[in-house]
Image (tube, rainbow, N blue to C red; front, side):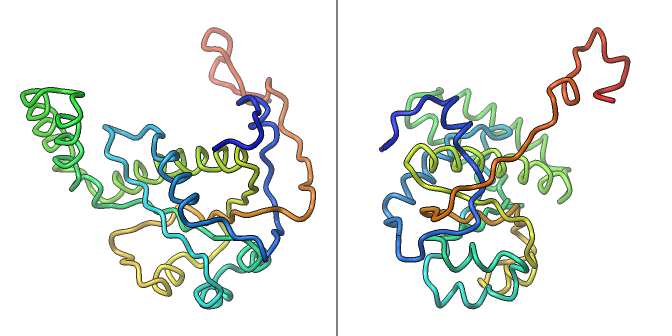
Length: 219
């Protein structure tokens, strides 16, 4: 449940990356589960939901990851939890389950379900791992951004981390490296220091309208 009564614009402006957390504060697993479930309301290609989340919230497991997170040990050990966000390369295997659930919930009829399952299966039958990787990572990142905003809304802080030994970390957690591709780690907890503000490029450097860009965005 929201603790701040902030507008979405305020939540976006409030969210900052925090590098150090209160190591004595623990977010209950039930609340983490609830936040992640909300995060999975994010959009995904053909609604195949390729995101997967592995939550590490005990020090014994964190110690196994210590040398694999490079310069991010402080976030690893002080956070309430660190979440490994993955793309599942086999996410297309869930197409029938997902669309059967749509029928069960009354979102579509049986004939529509059969059509979508067949159409999607045909579309992706010839796709290679690079397709599932790029699509899976894009969708996983959408869910992760949503999770960060949800955490901010509840009074928590986060820090997305890309600097870690990806394959070694998966192996340390006994995760199949042929099936799952890591997007990033996400540290979550109660920050103990005010985060630094950071500038953004002026909007004219990143935005172009189709009738005036002439193929150039920014400088």
